[in-house]
Image 1: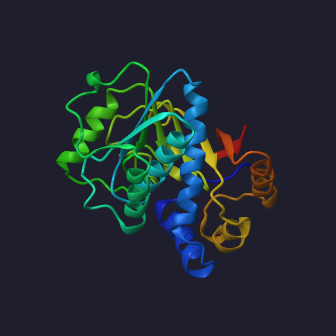
Image 2 (image 1 turned 90 degrees about the vertical axis):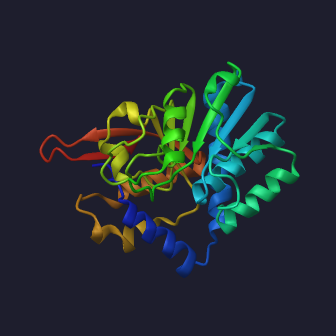
Length: 261
């Protein structure tokens, strides 16, 4: 038996426990998320793309994208960050990351380009616009972002593709990324959405202790699983903080679960 998916409400509880009970700051998890994102972007692009374009929103997901841009730039690669909603609405932690990126000399664009034709063919896009907390709402800027990204082929999404409901798997964006790097644990929506909505799926270790999932949240999940499944994941994280995910479906219950491949 593999592992079940986590809903956005359960993931929010994990984040609360990390910050309030374990006193692990969001910024530390954001740094780990951004580092893993930059590593995977580099691996997926196979170094044939020399321009990394990060589309960032205003929340913590944006912060992870900004960190990735900073990491890529520090490795001598070209990175730029586009903020479709500008930078004034950035949350505090993400705003600090923005200041660091700006000081490093990373190119900052404060509005979404009209189309993707002005980008070079060697551009690789990173979707860090919306995270697992997304809920459907009318938003002209977001609709423009969805339209822009839906016309781009080389995209890596952070945590969950922008416009995808982390619990239901419903997509409101038509973004079809090359891959998705989810953080900490696979969200339920990623298991049940159409494969084209997420591309290849990876999970990254961002420092969440195993006992948070096993001891604190296991009673809130409807799917049974064994502690050995979690232990296998964390043993794999010891060797590589990024693991590729395989999605399976239980024939008897018709419910999806995941393992690392």
